[in-house]
Image 1 (cartoon, rainbow, N blue to C red):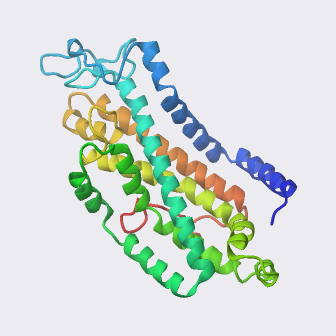
Image 2 (image 1 turned 120 degrees about the vertical axis):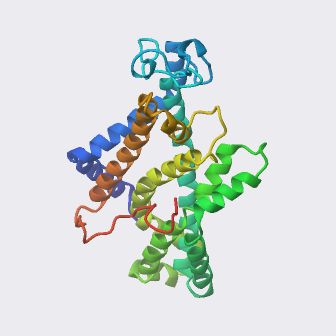
Image 3 (image 1 turned 90 degrees about the horizontal axis):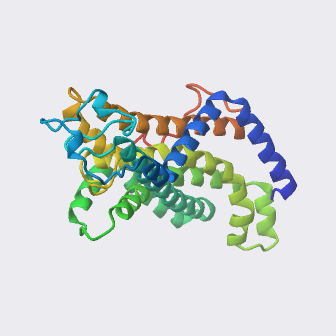
Length: 318
């Protein structure tokens, strides 16, 4: 088991490698920027006097498109206003960051927690537990996520909190890849000498898993968690785009992009700002995740020889 001094030294080394990676630092900067936008959304709303729920029909023309150039951009409305409602688009984007990051991060926590638990049990104990959990993983991995999510959204009572529903649906369909990675690592580690020595000394299985296995898969789990977040954010945006995400008028990048398609000829800014926000936050997490992976395993070769852990790579899984 790593000592605190060794762990601290390793953390310093990882951070120094990260700082030398320009893409990783750019990615981290983008992530921090959007986290700050989400956290400070109420402050921006107070400073500008614009709420994402306040309708301003006086800012619209006769055709309900924003009055003025560039979608109604002005000193009081930095990103312009939303067609049909006149809501401030900057407020919609910043509050939409709250929704996307909250659901994306929470769903990632759910999927990683479930995947790590199942992967550890299957890999460490083997036998019938491994066979049953591996079959369950295959079933969930091959399940049509979007179809199930749309059907479930239509049947769940409207009183059930929609953000919580999205977190559960996205999170409980996103764990199979985590479980497969953790199972593979655990199968390898359980045959190592230090694990066998701990078992020979009579150490319980739970204690071996916590003290010997988990610390040695932590780096893999951290990297996988980081690169999984964009997929979860994208899944929330996709569901909102299809009309089964958070309920209006709660701001959502996906729904804004969906609504903007019919206005793109008249007001392209309505599509550009939420679309760019979604693109930049997913790009930031991907760039930071790639840099973190390289910092934790600098010997890993990049390119086609090494497959990246892509949470959206198969089966439509988030």
